[in-house]
Length: 101
Image (cartoon, rainbow, N blue to C red; front, top):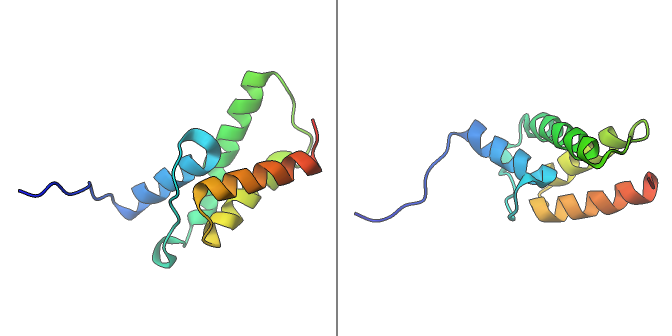
């Protein structure tokens, strides 16, 4: 019997992409057009959670608007077809320039 990769329900795939987008995984996964509906909200929610956890662990406080800017950037880039790594890297740099802490 051939060894096939596991197949995930579309919402599980979106969740995996969202987790990876927020720095909790790695890879170059981009959503397909058929699965992009609602992806922005999922990515944004997962990213906001990861962002808050990372800041809490570092003991720093984020300026007002920083989390929304960073996670909105990641969601937009992924929905536009960027890989997870590219979106994360681009948005980390853009956020650091806009909100130096």
